[in-house]
Length: 215
Ligand code: GDP
Image (cartoon, rainbow, N blue to C red; front, side, top):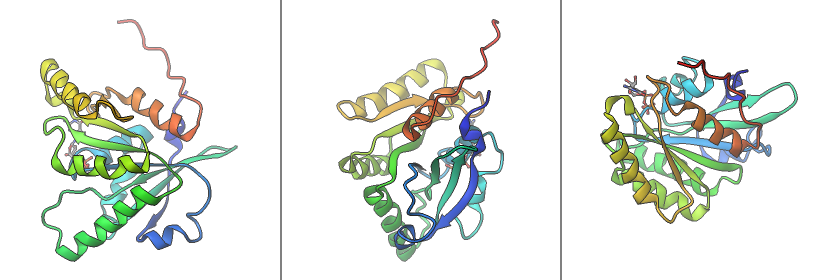
């Protein structure tokens, strides 16, 4: 059996908070947002979770990088939720005004969106927690939305380095409701845990993964 997330389809894009109050965006379907520094591995993770090569790369096409991109996860019976691909942050090159608009959209969405049930925060395990990530966590925490950190690209680290990176984030999140796991799209490690977290936030049944063959 495959994950419900494999059914994700591009739904729509939103360019402003006002648009989110309008037609097409104000149903009561839960939303899980994906966010992180540019290059953290967000598109790759979304594509892997949805088992579709090109899905989130649509968010990287010109004109879509500053937008919220919505992917609908639905089956015959029900719309379970939206995966919302948020613009990557940390591009020093963005001009002042673009930057301000970007912050307002991303910040406003994360703080005010009623349908938002959880945030998946992608962090490159080689960089760990950056100042921008900390700012994002501090911004989201008062909204009482849980954050689940995917510490990505752990195939680039050895076991000790991976453990250290994980412990570093665990320490930083101590006392908060937020959680962290390691993830490698290349090795497909952490995929089942990430899938389970998103489906749980959607209130959807967990994936019955095929049993692994004994080695
Ligand atoms: P985004 O900007 O956060 O959407 O990042 P991308 O998904 O485009 O990934 C940025 C770069 O990291 C690309 O070259 C990916 O191929 C690479 N990448 C993403 N995930 C992994 C991973 O798990 N392992 C390795 N080694 N590279 C990865």
